[in-house]
Image (cartoon, rainbow, N blue to C red; front, side):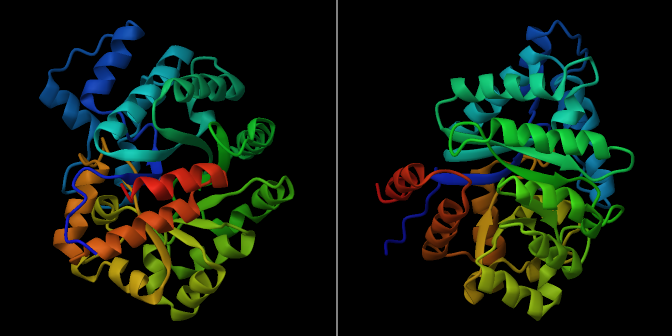
Length: 332
Ligand SMILES: [Zn+2]
């Protein structure tokens, strides 16, 4: 094993939100193509699109999505955003990405959820890197019909590669427990749609347990599973893939003390953990910087980086042919 560090990848990003990945540069381009006036200079724009280091919680963090969402309400805006985000990920060294978004959050100006998905697919098809889409259902109140429609559309558009490949559950985990979504995800399971669930980010191990019981094959974050060894063993036994996002986890206080970040512990246990960006614009990061960060904060070795890459290939919601191509890319 050589000591050469992958500064420019290849990287895989399994957990990236479209609305959280709108950088100032992308925001300007989206405003231009839609004739939307954004009067702010670059510093103001960056401040509007990013969270301050003083962020107190996941709930504070979630407020940052308001402005980028205003740029993602037309077919052109959505298509261009997916394309531009994938392009910027490619520049950071990403070779495979799964972009996630909640179709229901892009219907404020009259688009249907189906039109939102079609627009996103159009952007995806123009991108150069291997990529797929994950449709998010949202935690919340009174949006049950929206979530059911998202699941129906995931079923309609589901493919194994280059399209919609899975469903997710996102939003305020501390306010709306995972357990309340058993019925919805029974439907997802019945339809044979693979799914991941954000769990163990703002709530504890019981949230991760519920997500696994419901049939999630991946968990978004899973940081707080560390407080329960039984849950950790369950994650390991079932081969559940954890989509960890270090900078995001620090900023939302998913973990109080980054020196206790459980990434290395999970790796040592043989848990299939991966490293991802979550919301690169909101967090002012990219995948390459996430790896720099875990090298310095967690002392991740080159060998462990390779393990993270192979874990991500194993967990990717894509076909074997694509996975084999991805496995070869790290050997080059
Ligand atoms: Zn997320």
